[in-house]
Length: 349
Image (cartoon, rainbow, N blue to C red; front, side, top):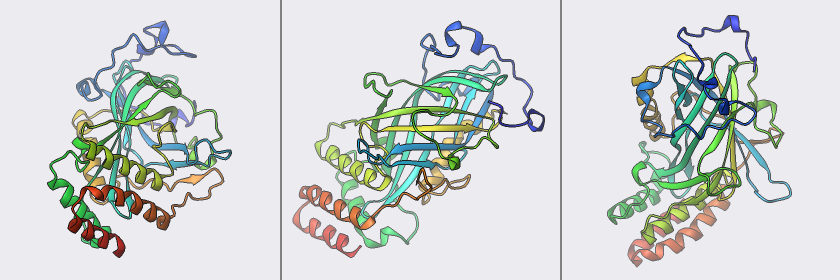
């Protein structure tokens, strides 16, 4: 894909190439990468020499899955968090995926991360192509608001936060106890590995506002189908996690609704050299930024929109009513005095 005039690019020296051609099975139109091991995504940072950053991660999903008009949404997540890392020969060893933050009227701030469990593949800078495979899980957890303003003033988040943390169960208040959302190859629930391929997603129209031909070095695409959340073994935690997922999907247009398909086109900038220490700290820097009231160190993404550019809107009054109903059921686990405190806090919002 020729998206820029090669003469204006500042491509660093050191590219050797050849890994893409080291096995005829790797070739398009149907790259077969199964001969490659799939190590942990962070295991081989010491091997990384080159990278391509995803400055424009353009996501798409159906907000009304199964409807005659599924109301497909398009949204660019915060820029320049995702990237693909590889050797001078072009062997892929690591892919960093997006993180996002949303708010809920009753529950406050939620962190959303696509965590890569393993990856393999190749990059070819000579023709700007790539073929990779990866496995991911979605992770969702709360972080305490750091400002004295916002939803925390209502009291509901603090009451829930204090009560659930005191309960000594693994509620999702840290990344290590995050809600785990499984994913798999579209149409194949038994296959947790899915492909990353060259070019744009197919099967649905892509609006002009989600394209970046004039700026990008190249583009790849991937899609993943959402599976069930992982059970923790603690019924009260599983009940709460299901409640949180319902709330998240109400606010995000069913982005992580079970069986929905989440696709994204990853628009890359030109190759750069890897600073291995920076690579290792990159996700941590983002994690700190998102925890701090969901700031983005490299600028915000876009609002979700439909194909015609109409913004996706959230009916917060409706969400609040539905959240209250779900919360009422969960509050049966509390004693009556604590339940009354929380309900009064809910009424004050």
